[in-house]
Image (tube, rainbow, N blue to C red; front, side):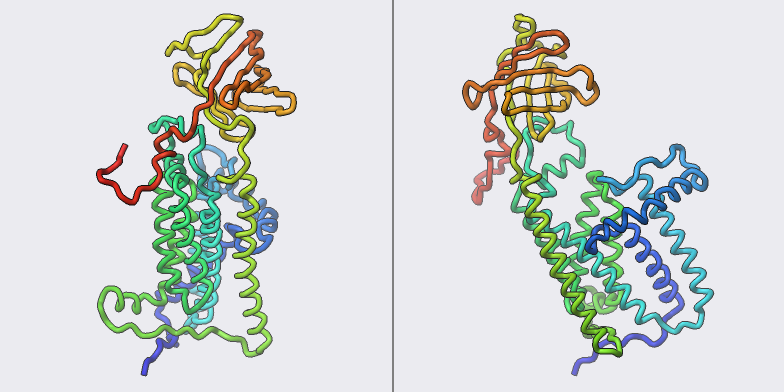
Length: 430
């Protein structure tokens, strides 16, 4: 006969204080960082986050006395000064709230119900986040394969984040592996019987995400750290059981998996129905959205016109052919077109600049300018005598320019053509 661990009738003062703190801390964090976990929540978020913008700016200026005023808010980076001050505010709020709550509710014997429902909220927050993370890897949207621009970039010039993105983007199989692990973690967290396994996997998966973010300077450090903390919180109720099973080699009693039910049957039915609608909606809509997004970005997105790498064969300025001198800062050496509306010009001295690149495929015209100089634009007409040859004719700063270029086959790059080999007689490390 097996017995389960019953919920304790009396909690220690330390456990009650910890519950109060984490309840306030997690709830306010989820509200201020919803991360798209509920349908249309981001629309509501944009409304109530605006007052917080103003408040946090005031806190930074008048309480923390920051050297520079906060002017940048959460964007592609979740580690802005605003995000860090917002997290500090949430931490202080939780501390103050815990003190007040502890003084006002000193006679409480336990918080079994509150602990249960907070765990449910945290499970679903982590679970939906992991489903989102997993889907963008399974569909391979988060990490695209190396672009022409990236293939020409000197290894040492890559940012740590750029190196991590290229490492992940190179291998479709590795994206599937990490994506399925994150997806499995999310699905397991949705159900009480598998939540512990999901949290264990989540601790490993989120820990790996956190390590990459810290070690490669990816600006999602705060969220990934919070996911690790939340997974540890979910596992806290099973700490003794896990310690006995994994470390002490002792019998581990079955967990108490009984759910907290309402007295009225219709409430339980409604809650269960909402749960499965949310799970199905999350999985279906996330996959659907990512599949739709494949046509906009990712490896399967339509390539822009003239996509590729072009080596300059000759550069003629005002009828003079300019030699390819390594000291020349004005003669083109290569042209790369990786993304719609953007091109990069690499000069003979290996310096490079990104250009706004507007192409009209009907008129066969191109308008280019650097992002730092929008006044001086270059106007070209282009032709392609063969599929590998590109000729540009036009003017730039009152100079007439003719540029003859030849397309470089991307399959010539070792990174692209090496592929997978089951048998390697010797290491192929280049």
